[in-house]
Structure formats: C-alpha cells, structure tokens
Image (tube, rainbow, N blue to C red; front, side):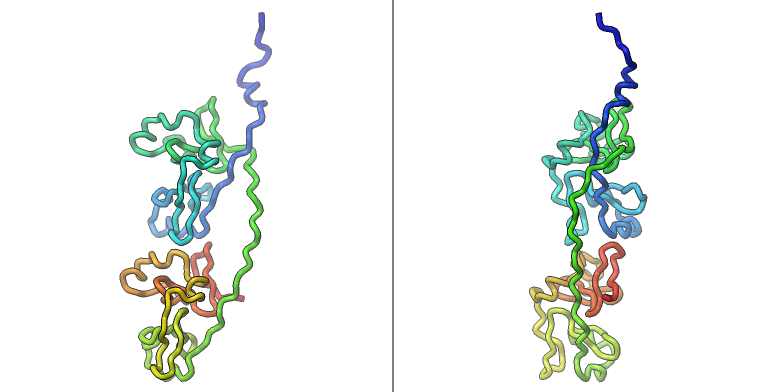
Length: 250
C-alpha cells in the first residue's frame, strides 16, 4: 500500500504559484477620495498605497468619464483570476459585495486585488510572490500647447470682459478661448466651435462633467478656460492627469 511521505501542507508550500496581475492604478484618483467619492462608485477598489483607486479586473479606465468602465465578465483577467465558487457566496449574490479582505467584485464573481492571489487552503487573498509583467508602454510624447496670443489692444477692455468676449485673461491682455477667433469688426472673439482641433486635442478629460462647468458655465480650475462643452488649460499650460492640475509647459 502507499504511505504518505510528506505533509500535505509542506507539499503545497513547495508548489510554485503563478504570477498575478499588478494593480491597475488610476492616475489622479487620489482626488476622488479627497472629494468624498468612493472607489467602488467608479468600478474600482482602494489600491495598496491607501490613496489611489485601482480598476477592478475586467474594467478599463476611461479618462473622458473619469471612471473605470467597459466592465466585462468575459475579460481574460476575470476568467483567469476569479476566486473559485465566489459567484455562489451569499454576499456576492445578495449585496454584490465580496467579503474577503483584499478582494473585489469582478464579473459575477470576486477576484483578489492586484498583487494578491487566492489561497485555497486558507480561503484568503494573500500577497503574491510575483506579478505578471505588464506590456511596455511607449512613452507618450507631450504635445506642446499653443503659445499665448493676446488680442491686440485688449488691455483696454474693462476688467471682467475677457469672458464676456469669449476670451480669458493672459497677462495684461485677453486671449481668445480655444476654438474661437478674434474678429476685429466686433472687437470680440467669435466663431467659437466645439469641433475646433484645439478643443479636440487640448480639452481637459471629463471636464464636461465638472459641476461648475455644467451648472454655471465656469471652469474653476486655475489656469483654465471654457472651450466647447468642456474646459481647456490656458495657452502655455498642459493638464497633468496625476495631479489633476494645469501646469506650465517647459
């Protein structure tokens, strides 16, 4: 007859564990929690740094919605890394939640967070030894923003009339909002277009959803102005996704 030569737990410990997905950190998502917006409300979970949010497995971050979206139960991540039988858990069925620490809802089941794996013996998500290598991302070359083009003589416009003439304050003068052109006969920036190339290229992602933009037609982010239905950073500035600020281009 066969006799066990090793303890099952010892054998389990020696088996190599496959790598798991890394965290899919949403840049700038620390501003969500600072504003009282939960990660879960945007199809994400709290990352291990305790500040950012990470997209759930099967979801992809959409900058224009400022949310993780396009969630799919058929995602390869969900299929490969869901917790076995978690679709049968009461809290998952009744409340849509996942009880184990370091886990989140994915598809119709639960998955361990990025950098964690499911330990079937302990029935917990535990820190994984290795994570899957992410595909190298080509460094995105920054496109230089337009340089300020002050409207000639706009220093004579009365204070506060830059916005009334579809412009914004730039130094001592006014500059036309992106998508508008100065019309000397009207002494104003006119012919404003939502489809102007500058608006398409330099609008701030998801700024059309900002409360001030929707309700008051204002862009309250420093160094920004209205452009189309959204907001754009002023000429000479670029939007930084991580800090969620318009920063000067160097």
